[in-house]
Image (cartoon, rainbow, N blue to C red; front, side, top):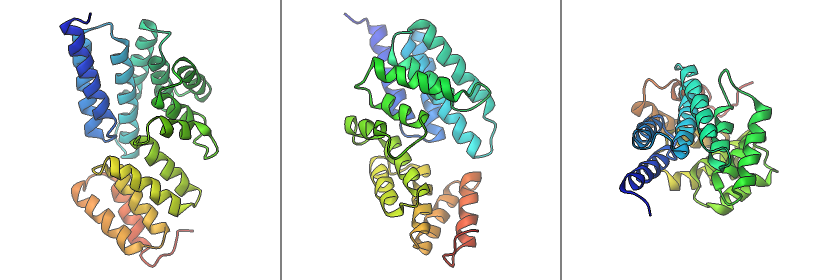
Length: 245
């Protein structure tokens, strides 16, 4: 039987996961606070350490692309993932968290990252998050069945839908990219990252006025965001529909 303390910890972790799944810096900040609260209640909770590692790593990446300090976030991610592995080395979440933590920063290790993601899938093959991380760790290939498995297990998986849209755009499959980013926005309409990439895909589809309008709206919301500022400059410089050399 679960104690009231354990139920409280589980509730905090669930709230933190939902916050982190929205994939914006303020959501990661909220998730970090909730995971730390869970650890105050249960200092040996591997799930909380794992979630904290992922939140710090993902938050760090968003800070990095916005030209903000990120190294300390990556360091925190690795430390938390390491602690999770010490506490529960046979659980999938701790290996997935380590894979996420090894993506960027001074501890980045592509080979170990892939191995950790593979182990997470082996331990818990029903976990969509682990399949998604395996796809990322393996190089985001459109031919990799891991991302399809993740979306089969969780069709409304915002991060997987969004990232697949971005990869399709990088392969110049813009119409398909737009469909996936639209699906991502149907799950999380407030995502600035998805709205940013939606605007960029519209540009590559030749819908330049729409793309500029979307990016201008984002810029008004976040005038100090370096990523959005770059996107707006790029789009306004190519209002004639010409792509950069």
